[in-house]
Length: 353
Image 1 (cartoon, rainbow, N blue to C red):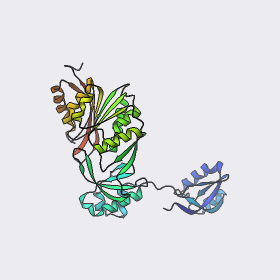
Image 2: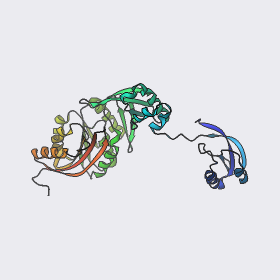
Image 3: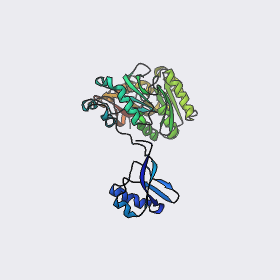
Image 4: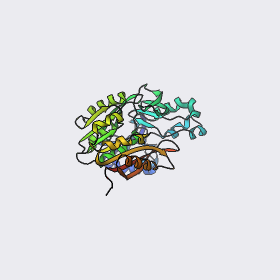
């Protein structure tokens, strides 16, 4: 639809505008896609036609130019009906991540030839999205960097992402970032007690510790990140969110840097879902004699919490006992794989009284 459009309208006194609009809506006579506008002591209401029901109201009828309402974004599949066949639409993965003003799509192999068409439709249907990228391969490597391909819009990988009153500078060609853990970040922030010291392992650009700094009464968070590009953005984001006094960034491998905070923390966050069990020992080492670990992991959908037994063995080998305080399925990853979270209470004693 055009941004503005000429239309017939009725000129209604302000005091009667709400009543008349309801009447017109009931009869389907108002042009809802156009915004009514004020003119001195009157409201001009766009109408479909000059019929008898409208004439009976006794108001002046004239022609005016009106601003169009912003078009509501359709679902991706709905928007693609004009350019793809029914069989092609069935293969579209309708969910996608939006980081700042960048959308990241997953395109099945059978739709590869249509990937740019799909991207253009997404752009046209979502004014807030400026760039569309395609996820070429799962996150991999020691730095967990995604393999992405530019499809449409502005050719860029850097953006500003807003979440829970915080702002994050992200370069998604160089760092890992997921908006899908937003609820988890706030959930944990609400659990943090007065003056707690937190270890944020695999901190990335800082979403967990920065949300904690803004929304919890924590005393300090130590944010450890191995990827130099992510660490640089972590430092920038700490400054952007005025959290310098609450967050200490540390560049390096968790296994090498955990000694700096050994035995100092009340709570540990471990948001690296692949092979995170191999770092569980380091998570325990961060804790004081007791504390909580928030452990994330990719698992088979049919056996979501079996990993807990492995963690109990690791804890026992390191002089800890653990018990599950909370467990949940956090997000879908693939048809067979999901991400889970376990909140684990750990105590360095023989028993958990």
